[in-house]
Each structure stands twice: as C-alpha cells, then as structure tokens.
Length: 321
Image 1 (cartoon, rainbow, N blue to C red):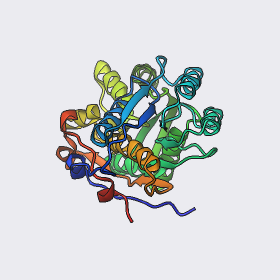
Image 2 (cartoon, rainbow, N blue to C red):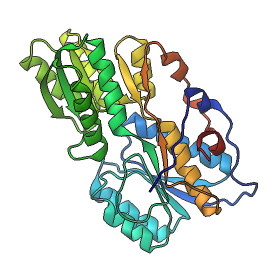
Image 3 (spheres, rainbow, N blue to C red):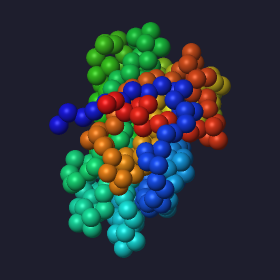
Image 4 (cartoon, rainbow, N blue to C red):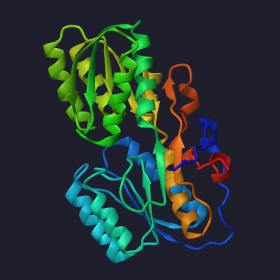
C-alpha cells in the first residue's frame, strides 16, 4: 500500500485552517490519548480541540487516570461504544494490547483514525503520525556529533515493547553505527515518565563517573534526566524527542541540547481532520506521515509558539494531492 506523504514547516502552525466543507455537521469525535502527565499528549489534545472548533465538531477526550493503563483504556473503549460517537481518534496505550479494542470499534461501525502509535490490525481509516525510526536516527546523530563522535553515553528507554520507543531505539542504534568511538554505558527504561527517569539517572550517576551524553526517548524523561544532573552538579549533553513546549524552553535555557520534533499539535489537528473528512465523504489518504526534524539552538525560536497562538494549518496546505 503506497501511503501518501506530507510535508510541513513550523510556520504552518499558525496558518488558518480551511474548512473541509461548508456545512456545519456537529459530528461527535472521541479522542483517546495515553495519559495526563506527558506534555506531548497535552499538545495532541490542543490540536484536536483546535481542529474541532474550526470544523464545528464536538470532541470528547478519553484519558486514563493511571498513565498508560491498558485495562482503563479498554474500559473507556467499552464506554465509547455505548455512547456511539461518529468517529474515534485513537492513540493506543499499547499497540498490541489494544487490537481487541479496534476490533470492537470496527464491529460497532465506528470509524477509527489511528494516531502516533501504529496499530497493525483492524480497519483503520488513516494513520497520522511521524516516523519514529528516522526521528531516532536524526536526534541521536545530533547528540553523537555534539560529542565530537566519542565519549560515554546512556540511553533512557520508554515503555518496554512499546512501538514508538522500540523504533526510536532502533534509530539510535543505527546512528551509533556511524560513531565507533562512542561507548553505551547503559540502556534502561523509565516508562516515558519524568520522575522515573530522574530516579534512573540518579542511579546511573552513582554508578558511572563520566557520562558525556544522554539519549532520552521522550522529552518528559529528558526533563527528569536534567533534574538529576542538576542535583548531582554534573553535566552531560542531553537530547529528547517530541518537541514539547517544556523541551523548547529547556533548549532556550541551555539545559537541553535538542529534541526531535514529533509534531504533537499537528497530529491532533490531522487526526480530527481525517476523521471529519471520512464522515463527510471526502478523500483521506491511508497515511499522513510527518517528516523528521530536530529542534536545537539555531532554530528553536521558530518553534517557540505559545499554545494560544497555535492553529491547525489547512488540510490542503499539508497533504499532497
């Protein structure tokens, strides 16, 4: 299946959204995200809300109270099936464990747009997301070049077996092949959580006297790493992935070297737009994939846009014909 690709630039974040139809249909869209703690998902929800407001549809958010809870998300899907929204925009807490949920949504006749973490089973209208592997390669390459191609590095992993974490780690390992003088001291999971990453990094700092660089699979964990380094009065070059507001502020403050831009706001925008287009019988590609980009000190100001300034770009300005 040849998926259509799209291109984007940070300046498009403030472009006005062109409605996909002149009619106001008030469709109801259920939006599932993984947790309330990760800033990435906060911006996905902002994007979903922005698109909903401009397309005159209603969005209801479903967020596990316990971060990344499989049982809770499954329960929320059951609730949504009873409520019968017009469509679902779905980020699975686990891409394999949520396959039965997709099966149930399919059986209920509710269209599903899959966002961020790809689900390989079931009927999906479109996948909206970024290439985790390439983003991992580019972000890791930036880190390793910043170290002059040598030194000691630790890796802070996300949720074990989660597809996004797995692919970002594959990207790191691919980039590492270009730098034979870099030594990986440790690679440990912190489940995409800031506090867990802080604790993992505290332990690593006690074990290793010289850590030159840190590759964190997401920005929340990179923030925890930075806090541990500051408390220990140690310095390392730290990179994260997701392009969150907190990461941008950390880059501006000189605390974070870089973050891979995962286009969180745009994923929320285009997830809802794809769902609405499907409901309004307009063309939707099987995939809307954002290209990899790294945010660092030379381009960070381009990305420094407040939440109140963010507006979804038009579908036509992004999706190729």
